[in-house]
Image (cartoon, rainbow, N blue to C red):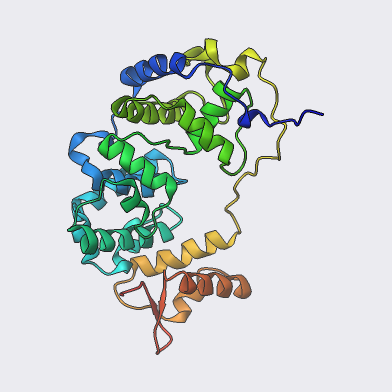
Length: 305
């Protein structure tokens, strides 16, 4: 009996070359003018944007990004500051461990690479806090290299256009990576443009909630659309909740510490959340993650070392 393969593991039913020109052409006409796409952003600006844009929409990132680059225009500028200052400047972007990771990456760039963001993918991947996605994104967007850049938006475009399913798997698979590599243009510059273009297409047109096929440059070639847009058959897609979660408590505790000019007493933190067990768990988690530093006198502050 012949073994069955999942759609994402099959050879894409559309020719990669037939997608490149319309998607890149659409991008050149409709791409948003974002500060990290401008030449003056440099590799450091690209890296900062990639950290901030993880699970955070562009409109929330923009003001924080611009303040961050004005304060720390080079990695060495951030590396010279206490990590708590990175957490403070991160503000309400959410997932504040990203601020600590970016600070750690800035220190490594300063120590290992003379303060310049490395251009080699392997060197980027070796930086603390840098995973496969971020290394590929910086190498591609900052240095024009040929890498498969797979964020949520790109994965959704590929799932629909190339494999005929509504949504990609909940976690990135080896089959998706293989498909992404197969779809890459051969030339470095064109591959980098393709990476940015597919990301923008997923963000603006082929969105999770409302695909706008009338505006899509590859609607006529989209496998999912040509198949009649079959409904998602995989595991249920999990929606993110916030109210009442430990994330919300952590956010309130951090807000007190960000706004404080001196270490704060336990009582100030106790006032932000009534339920003591959840509050203590959230505070313990912040300490364990290195986001909060407990002092010997019972007060708390953002990390200084």
